[in-house]
Image (cartoon, rainbow, N blue to C red; front, side):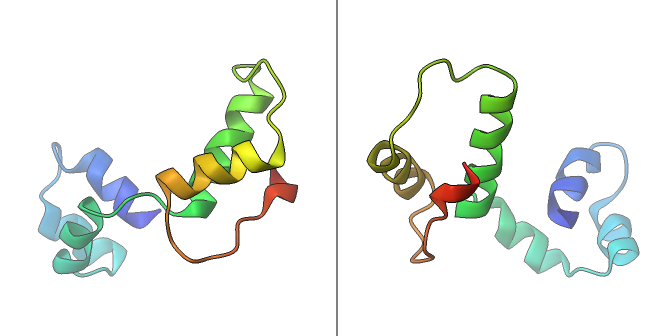
Length: 83
């Protein structure tokens, strides 16, 4: 969340100032730019899309797991119940 805020404001405020104010390292911020989104972030995005009506057909569990593994291939167990 902090890194997303820094990325959104970095055109207006120097990154050093933002990192210091949010108590994160600059190296951590720059490292986060190259990472893929976490499985939890992808799940949250799917939930928001479904709530907004942008996912019109129901997705079965294998399809959801396949989508989440492609986008966030971490070894964490994927929680389909949230979606």
